[in-house]
Length: 78
Image (tube, rainbow, N blue to C red; front, side, top):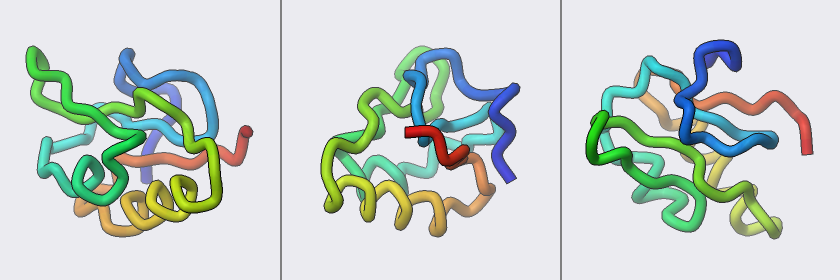
């Protein structure tokens, strides 16, 4: 399970975040490209934009559920 206290520093504040367990598998960026980006220097994903509509929220939830190392978190904060 993702740890908010260990989130990647680029992840913006809000409901979704990515922590340091990310293995750079690209699943979240493929599933929710409007919300996740890759840190090229560090080799991991982060949330660069919180979802702004139902479709983006669903895509972020799909990414969270599919993350192989459970590095994506949802703390419920809007």
